[in-house]
Length: 482
Image (cartoon, rainbow, N blue to C red; front, top):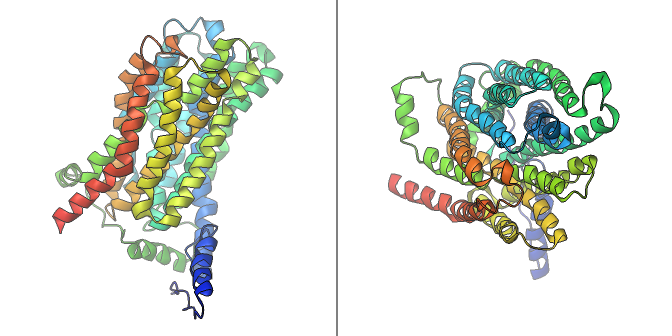
């Protein structure tokens, strides 16, 4: 069984060589995908995990965000005009029914993952929600959209917390931030691709089969999900303790378990679902702290900014439908850069002190963006720039997920429940807030409801809480336990 050797000592002869010897390893480490000194066998194990585990995770989240964003693209590409949507806040209610289902489904789905193999449960959920997406193309009334959006959200709720849970079973603290970032970035690509797909369908499929282009979008989304579901059933590796993946050797399976033990996150023995689980989870500080953090993030309504950006472009009357679908994807590109960059920085600086500092810096930039949108009466170029820069919001989700995976240790049920519950609570608090402060009928200024101002308040609160609050609570808990 191989071990991870340390770098050999360096002989230092001059003051100049001292500086060089301390700087070079750090400079190299930023571009390394593994821990320095990892053996060839361990690198091969991580490569397999990245190829099979991470690839299915990314493809699933890509489909999830594609399906979550398709309603907005369809709404701006003819659906609202054809069906007479707008005055009744139909788009906001579609979001509300979707979020209500996420609240119900998320915690139960993640607890199911502790007893049902992920390679069966997650592909099943992916196929089922995509099946409901398919039937959106037949909808002609708002109530039909509401019912199907609820069904989509119920099964789609398994994707984010479930995959983050499985990633935390395989990757160490020093590896998880970058992988979580890549995973969530795939969702950003899904948002962007939804805009490009709707734009392409508008040019090439509008009127085909007697249907407008926005209806074809839902059909194509379902077709894309089928091969991803099959790929997951065949190649997803479950967890290190239960894996039967044909591409992992016996040594690699044992080494995967040892890696978690060496990281201080060895899996606890399988536990029954009884009152001890509730007592243990309810008594944990992680449940409350990360639920508050994620709720503050959702209350900023940052995940809807691309939607508001789209509605603003449409309200100006200056842009064509393909432009209305394509321009907001630039926000996704900023999201992509921030997720990748912050993941690397956290792994480089160290998960102990890196996450809080990164959240604070990004939060300050986001505060500036919301401050400009609160003022609103600014030059159009500045407004477009801050809409695009709001893409920095997305890095908070992988940072928080990696944080949970790090601090919950080997308690699989605690980790699974916290990841799911914080998402459910976040969706629960944002439902009334989004309806009251950001109703689609008031877009994009939200002047009467003071939407941007209220969002700014929560951006500031999120910045302070994640920047210094979480680490402060953790230190207090550790001090008391000692």
